[in-house]
Amino acid sequence: MEFDAIIVGAGLTGSALAVALRSTDLKLALVDGRAFSTACPDPRAYAISPANMRFFSRIGIWRHLKHHHACPIHRMCILGDAGGELEFSADDEGIEALAWMVEAGALHEELSATLDRQHNVSFYRPAVPTSMSVSRTHAELVLDDGSRLRGRLVIGADGANSWVRKECGIASQDIPYGEIGIVGTFRAERPHRHTAYQWFLGSGVLAWLPLSGDRISIVWAIPEDQGRELMAMDSAQIAARVAAAGEHALGEFALEGAISSFPLRMLRVDRMTASRVALLGDAGHVLHPLSGHGVNLGFRDADELARRLALLGAGHDPGDPAVLRAYARARAEETFALQTGTHLMRTLFAARAPALAPIRNLGMNLTGRLPVLKSMLVRYATSGRLFHGESND
Image 1 (cartoon, rainbow, N blue to C red):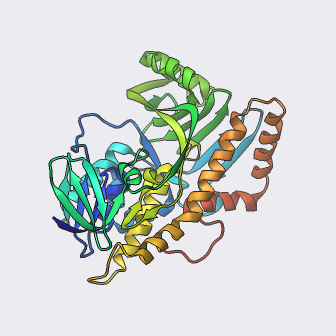
Image 2: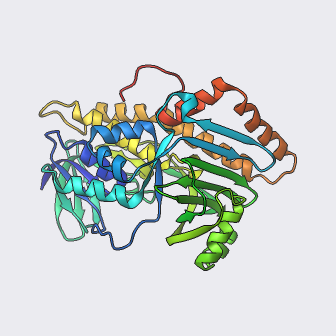
Image 3: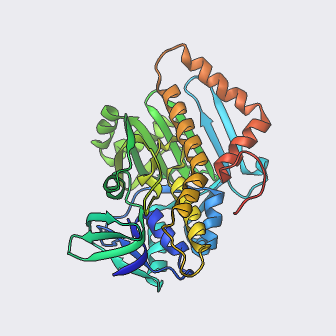
């Protein structure tokens, strides 16, 4: 079968890219090893940035998410491990929200429902690519059922252990943190008032993120041994431990559904593109969850690549090296800045040297007293830019 672009990976970023290309003339293939199912609800939730809210609005899914599934974050409180405190407010910055919390299951379902109505996508799932060859004009994938797909561009949206990245020879640097991320949903005794909390603790970094009603989503980056101990507890013990770690700021907790865990690492790649190949999302960058920007970086990748491809006229080559170079350049600054900043912050707060605690907490307090710096941080977190200026959003 012949396609303009073959997207390997039907997760959030791969699916979002396909939806963003639905009004184009591009013929797409979407390949994924899993059949779509809602049988095992995903306990994760994501803080969707204003830039990605606008992306979702343009591709037609935000109106459904906003009214039924999205919870705005109006305020964020960050607390250090030795008296440091930093607060951000949407009102202070003159924006509607710092971010919107959306549960992973709702986002998956909305993207899947939109894709099911899309006429320029052919689905290959469950299907696993087994080999890829690249010529001057095309790339060809062979799937495990013997199918052969030819496309002018292959997009690797297949996660941190990307088969596409390895197959096309893009080198990566993988830095394990010796921590696991624990995620789950809890019902809180007291209302969260659209406030997100983050604690830098001796036992890692804990975030409480507001969901609809009186529920919160938690992300706890915790040393592996402590994480395994927590995962072995029963629901009541886990809820009590999570509430106590945040000094019962929202009262007592009750766990809803299951919790899950995943190893934490940073992954950097030498390049985001190769001949007739572009990487997207976790296939091209993984960062510590303390910044909340992992999935947002992936959606920004999808937005940028979709713009580049949509601008091509009929008959133009989506795998043209100039197109791929432009995409890679456009994504380099934000990705490098967020990966580097997040890694440095995690390293600084993970260090146990007693002399470092007052220094890092002093820095947090000083930042809170400098409105211009706070505004710059919010601006970068919400738009990927430090300063106001022209934007494609």
